Amino acid sequence: MVQLKHPKYGATHETYGPGLPIRFSNAKAGLKDWASDYGADNDKIYGELLGYSAVQSGMAISPRGIGSLCMMLVVGRLIGLIDSRFMIFCGFIILGFATMMFGDLSLSMAPRNITFPNVISGAALALIFVPLSTLAVATLSNREMGNATGIYNLMRNLGGSIGIAMVTTMLARNAQSHQVAMVAHLTPYDPVSQERLASIAQGLTPALGSVAASNAAPGILYQTTIQQATLMAFVDDFRLLAIMCFLCIPAVFLFRKPTHHLPPPAGVH
Image (cartoon, rainbow, N blue to C red; front, side, top):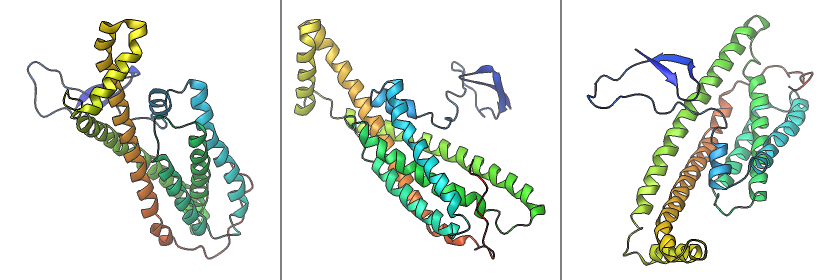
């Protein structure tokens, strides 16, 4: 076991983990990055790829919370009146289609094209997790409720952490795969890449001059390639998550139907 420092917070968040079974004579092995936090990729999508400012990113993300809040108010009134399994069933369907909408992302997409999927996905999450939290303990006695709630929250956090780690790993690997495939076309023998390179140099010539523009054009073209590869990796993740949402639909019917109608909660938090 070796002592590890958090790459962002340093010594204040030290922990211990298994060391490497082999040693390198001239290279120090260690963790480059830790698992991403919730929402850690929002800045990469909205800021780095789409070029939004902090205010624009917030305006694009905030409708998800609005949709979730409005749906929580509705679901809180429907619990006890409608079968919770039916609400979870509808939530997974809506979330799957909303995630498929994110699978059509492009670098030229307008903010309004992102707002609608965010609202729908926020509403779908509320439609899933509010009745799910109720249904998970619906068949238990009051004596078992405390332990069951703790186990439910534990498994939810563990599942979220594992899912984030898997999606982040796939994002990095898919970005590299797409980059390798796209860079293979950036050669002097590819007419499309040469035409794009000449267009970039022509646009930079009035400000930098012909020589400096010709030297700067390949770097700009490469940065564009990295952006496209990263965007395609996000699209792959969104489409995979959409498929997983649809695959979760049959699991809804594994829940046991409560033998009594649950009273609606006093308030939604």
